[in-house]
Amino acid sequence: MRAVGILEFGDPEVLEVVDRAIPDPGPGELRVRVTAAAVNPTDLMLRSGQLAPYVAEFDPPYVPGMDVSGTVDATGADTLFALGDQVMAFVNPFRPQGGAQAE
Picture 1 (cartoon, rainbow, N blue to C red):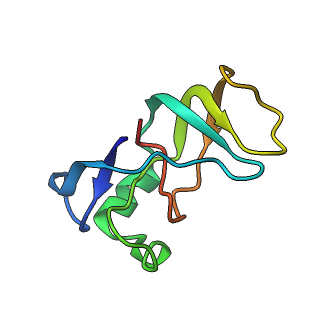
Picture 2: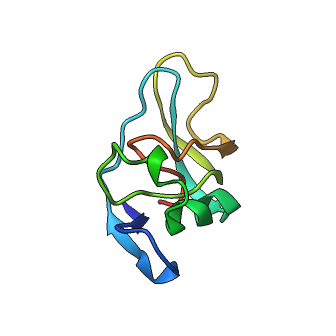
Picture 3: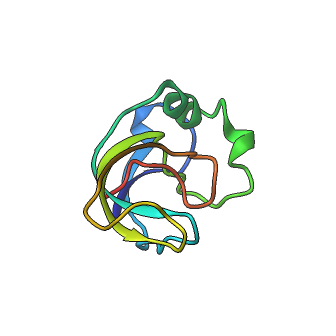
């Protein structure tokens, strides 16, 4: 899938479109086909490097994005959602899978 990637910290010019593997959701998780993802102030701080310590253990590219809406296209075990549900979510971008600015 295509995603916004931060390969190095800096100005907006460091953002690139990158290809990432399509993740499978684990227990209690959903996979959302993104319709819209907002740019949160935290995303700007991550891109600039102000939040680098929070992603230091992960390999770039870092995928920003906390605020997202879309359609559930896969579910893990123990979820209350069904395929096709329309959802909005707050995503923690400080995890190896990255944030919401992806397909």
